[in-house]
Amino acid sequence: MPLPTLRLPALPVRRRPPELVYAAGERPPAGALALLAAQHAGTAMAFIAYVLVAARLAGLDRPGTQAMVAMTLLGMALCTALQAWGGRWGSGALLVHMPDPFMITFAAALIAAHGPGGLAGAALVHGTTALVLAPLVRRLRPVFPPTVVGVVICMGGIALAPPSARSILGVGGGQWSIDGASALMGGLTMASIVVMSLWGGRLRLMALLGAIALGVGVAALLGRLEGGEALAGVPLIDLPRVSTPVFALDPGLLVALVLVAVLTQLDTLGSVTMMDKMDDADWKRANMQMVAGGIKANGVGDLAAGMLGSFPTCVCSANIALAYATRSTARVIGLGAALLLALVAFLPQLTMALTLIPEPVLGAVGLYAAAFLMVSGMELVVSRALDNRAIFAAGLSLAAGVALMEMPQLAQQLPEGLRFLLGNPFVVTGMLVITLNLVFRLGTAQRATRPLDAASAALHTDITGFVESRGAAWGARRAVVQRAALAALEAAEAIASASGQRRVTAIRGSFDEFNLDLELLHSGAPLSLAEGRVSTPAQLLEGDDDALDAALAQVSGLLLRHLADRVSASAGSGSDTGQSVLRLHFEH
Image (cartoon, rainbow, N blue to C red):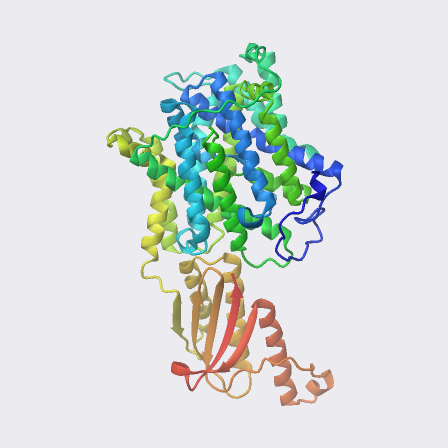
């Protein structure tokens, strides 16, 4: 059945952003659909390089590598199709999957020990963890705030940088003389990625693929492209070779894989949220039903394809960037990309050709990924207001990971079962930042109150300090904290300038991941925020006090409604009896 006639599950009701060319629920014309799907499939296929890196580390032969690449393409296709389809088992968004870069080290160890079939154990853990997490994702938000996720992503990039640089320069294994040909291939590939991404115009959409093609061409000119004879005996069309599953995981590796799977699904949460935000002009917060569907799609796809020898997958952030660049988020593009990925899996000559990419070229791709992960992670960390607790959690965790990278011999002293768990800088950083986040949260109340002296010259400083310090302790978004501080100051001014001898006496705040609420307690009657007709200039010039008070109240009310998402005033009750309360609500 042709794609345009498919009846897909319904999407949430959203207001379409005007800048989109094709929104999530729309269907592009056949030509545009084919072009966009080919670009998304091509972009994701470039990251097959991660599979090749794992196979090289494991010493896997070329036929085995080709079979693993083919099955991984099928796994990527299945996950991408489920994501695009939506409903109970997908997010209903244009989310294309790629091999999970966090799994490279673990996959290499399993492949070296058990062959491609060893990935079945990793797939079982990866998929099962995702399916368990899906219904719990909303309740686990406090455990995995953006600061924690950002540190993990940043460390993933840091850990990937050294081996990528060694591949580019042709050094390692006791040999530290730079190989000129390797450096030329890797350097030109890296430079091509940068140039096309920054100044390539439409070519920036294919920067990674174009750079790999350039690197391969340079390798051919230098006589460093090897293994071309392997294509001679490979059929053009054939069924992918299925590997016999091997379920052999020691306890240390099992725990490490569970942690990596959890961290991967945190990335899925962020990716679904980004696509939802891109598709909704009135976006306020993450759609947790979509997030749960996205995690399920990842789990089911990895579980099914992994049993046959597929590398575990994750959402490809480069494809999200491609969707933003093309202003096209139609989910049928994802179905088209999935179809193309599956088709390539049945073309052995093409999948075998992917295994011939020279190591320096793969190193450049790895360095590109490392740079992207490090910057993306830091961006997530600083997206929230940070206090000393968050600084210590992030800084100590990254320091521990970097120290382990510099002193890998420490892991050799551990029992064999713990080496996978405590010998991997990425895992150590992830475990430490999650633990420190939970420990440092102890004693951090989600509600706080501070008395205020209306006659004090430091009143404004006290209000701003309260909002900023509590916002940092709670890990609220910087933009929301800044807006809340301005609104609190304006509210204090409105209370002080209103008639009736009102005096602010205290400020109170509370926070959860979705809401930030401030309350200013004051003497006197509740502040009037009614929207009436604005007084005329003549009334104000005549010295009409009532008109002036009404005008000031209207101006303050307008400013507060502009800064806060909801404003209300009422008489206090309970412990606040005898006072009035001005409430400011901010959606987070």
